[in-house]
Each structure stands twice: as C-alpha cells, then as structure tokens.
Length: 128
Figure (spheres, rainbow, N blue to C red):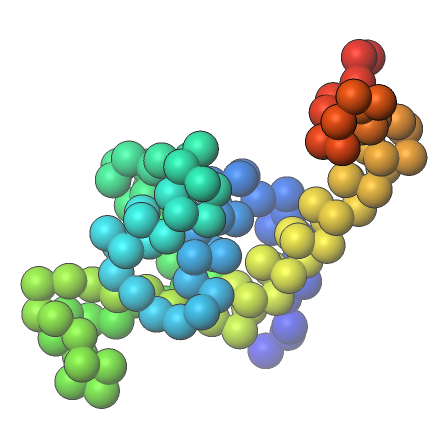
C-alpha cells in the first residue's frame, strides 16, 4: 500500500481544520466537537450540526478520522452517540495544514500587513 501525501488534501477549509484540531486530544462525539470548536475560536466559529456532519462525512471518506460504533465497549461509548478520532493520516494532514497556515502568516508579516499601533501594543491590520 502506498503512503498518501497529506499535501494532496490541502488547503483545508477553516471549519475542517478546526474539527481536526478539536479531535487532536482524543476521541469525542459530535456535540462535543461543536462545543470544542466554539471554545477554540473564542466563540467566533459556531458550526451548525448540518455543517459539522457534512465535514465529518468528508473526513471519514478521506480517511482523516474514524468512527466508533454506538456502544463500543472498548471505548466505553454511550449507545446513543457516535464518537470520532483522528487517524494517523488525519493527524499528518492537520500538522501539514498548521505548517501551511504558519507560512501564510509569515508571508503576511513580511509584507507588512500587520502594523504595531504607536498608541497601544495591540496588533492591527494595516491598510492595503
């Protein structure tokens, strides 16, 4: 079996990336993913259940996450909920996307898109 290149799936949508990041600490169920994404983004991203399950379907199809059956005794999963976890490939794709985002930010900084305000120490967007 040939090893897949994470770069083939980049760039991810922001919502897809947030879902992968939410799963980085371990397996969890859909509702908790919604809450984790909201917390990770300080409330600026709130996924609807329809959006989340569309993302989950794609991540499953791409082999980035795996689903546990309901009531999986190994994982002590509630019978009413399905849980998801990152696969090794999913973790690789999430890392590759994080690197891509870091590189994008570095370019923006080099191009002076961020300026320090002389009045305060906060960073703000400069005019383009």
